[in-house]
Amino acid sequence: MSVDWELLLSRLADELTTKGKLSSPRWQTAFRATPRHVFVPEYFQQDSKTGDWNKIVVDHPEAFDMVYSNVALVTDVDDGRGVSSSSMPGLMTRMLELLDVHDGLNVLEIGTGTGYNTALLCARLGDQYVSSIDVDYVDAAQRRLASLGYLPHLWTGDGIDGIPDRGPFDRIISTVAVSHIPPAWFHQLADGGAILTDIKVNPAAGNLVLLRKRGDISEGRFDAGRACFMDMRHPDQPDPPPAADRAGGTPVRSMTNLSAVAWEQPVPWFLTCLALGTPIDVGYLLDDDYRPVAARLSARDGSWAEIDTTDAHPHAVTQAGPTRLWDAVERTTQIWNAHDRPAWDRLGLTVTADEQRVWLDSPDGPALGHLGT
Image (tube, rainbow, N blue to C red; front, side):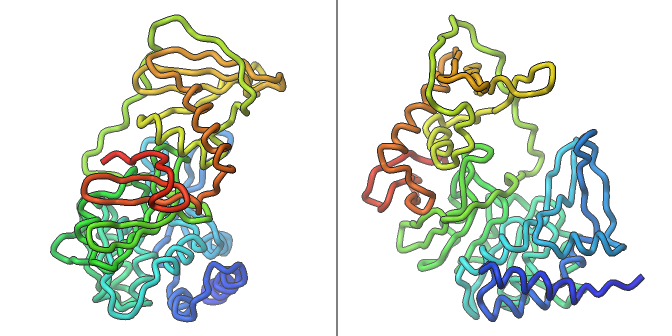
């Protein structure tokens, strides 16, 4: 069976160009020269009813159509959850253009994955200027890249360490989410260089940030758009501990005028998780018809909060434990409101050897919190 993948690729490139996600002529050329199906020969789709993952081999027209669509595709599954993916092409091209690369720059990619983004970098810069690291998948990515004639420097290891003997790097791009800027990236970045990564302090709590280094400081703003990457994995990484059993103490009841799904407001939810400094799990209590009637927040120290999600207003809140989780949501939402509800591009990050400070509007503006190191 023959599929005209070049036509499909051209159609996708035209779509991304029209949407403003692929503007640079040099990146347009690189994108149109890079077949995605070489790097995504199969992917997984989850059954909405059973939750099972079904493997789709890219050997028929419907699968090729999916590969050449602007969608993220899960490429590996472990223990019932997706652990690796090929990101949305439009997000990849937007990030590559944000990175502002030029001929002759030395680039480090964190998170090789399928190798597709690596191939785009090679097509634009030449493989001698591209290094990439991943905890897994490198052998398969290397074979796929070699099939197109690319021989970048690939390394299997913990992305948090970078690749010291290939630096300094003029650009570092991370296609996995991290809770803070790893010190190794900061030290391996050349003066005047840039880091682009997804900062996530909790699931759905964070965004892309672009930092430029000058001397002992790397600094920049969060991106105005949205991005969501899987968390960085580490060798022999244990599963995250479950939330602790609900702590003792007398539950405190109150009422709130906030929506019970405050975490759907991305900036205040980021500020809440930043202030709490500990992972927060979010779940729902369902009625007999499987409709949510309450939302539940829980923390590793046993703290918990339960918020009514019915049409009643105001909403009833019950919380207990050493940390008042809903109180933190209320406080950070008040701060967000007091500053005229800033969007992502009003937030920035300053990274030094000693601290990673999130600020509002300018580096000398109000400090909103600190990322852990």
